[in-house]
Image (cartoon, rainbow, N blue to C red; front, side):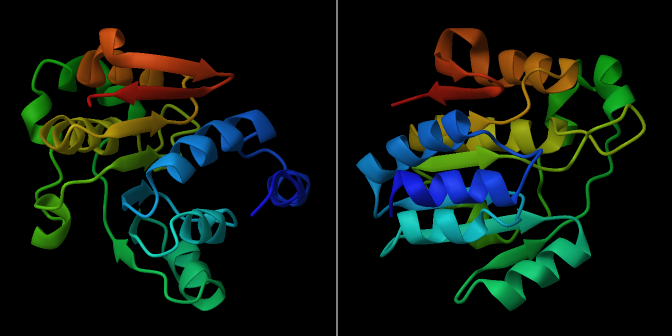
Length: 188
């Protein structure tokens, strides 16, 4: 793997993560690989994470059927768990007071009981106030990472909900790095 692959991914997948954001996650992942990697969201970058964690365990969680199907068809050996998010971004102002309802208990036991070394939160989309928000994925990532003393990346923290959820659930004092819209939180 190389920086050229990341550059090609960014050029072929505009509007997603930037080269600097991918590099931040990639560099941390390469230091820990092979490891247990949990990714909320699949896409054209899924093979990058699979390859970077070669020999480790990589599991993806996805709520959009066409993206889950795309990943299963285009990424050999990928494990994708289909989920449903019930939260909308607009609900954040209420749900922040009862975060325990955000824990994704419907995930398989093998996901909830694994000690994840690295977790990347890049789903659900959450691009509009009426869309599924990332409250559930961020809160679940926080519970899993704190237990396993792992590292969590949250993408799109230029958006209010992602930034507020990350600070509330992962803790601003655990943020170790921020590159553009990607934040990194460490518990180890």
